[in-house]
Amino acid sequence: VRNGEIRGDQYLIVKVPGVAGEAVLYFMLHRLEGLTKDMLPEFVDTHANRVNVIRQTFVGGTSFSEAQLGSGELYTRDNWSGTGKQLRIEVCSIADTSADGGAKVLVYMEGDDVNCSSSNPPTSTPTSTPTNQPSGIPSQSPVAKCVDSPLKMF
Image (cartoon, rainbow, N blue to C red; front, side, top):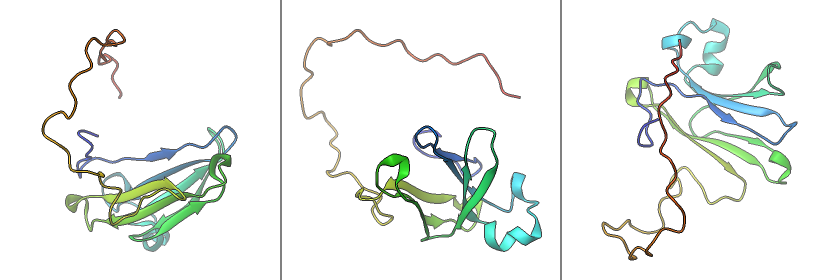
């Protein structure tokens, strides 16, 4: 992810963790191209070019297919993390091909002011200049900058 964007040639699997002891959810857009081009024929109609939601009960445990969502479809889990609210995974849109883009997916809790048409836009137009003068001397020392790791993945 760079500048809040993912290029069409990049893939992303999203992890939605719960509290300890609760299943973890993962979701991804499953295309019939690249690494996933050789999908078994019996899954093409139900899984291809859809956002697939997977549930894993514990690390290293068996994974279960929960849902295959197309544009406009919604997946919910009741009482997520003991909150009494539904977790909602909503697919706003799926581009026809990777070259055209990916999927726009919202993950939110029941009652949050989020929807596909607005995706919760800013409440006011950004300004080009600061609205307040700096307060003066910082209250804390600056934090050290991040440094790239020399480790490489193979």
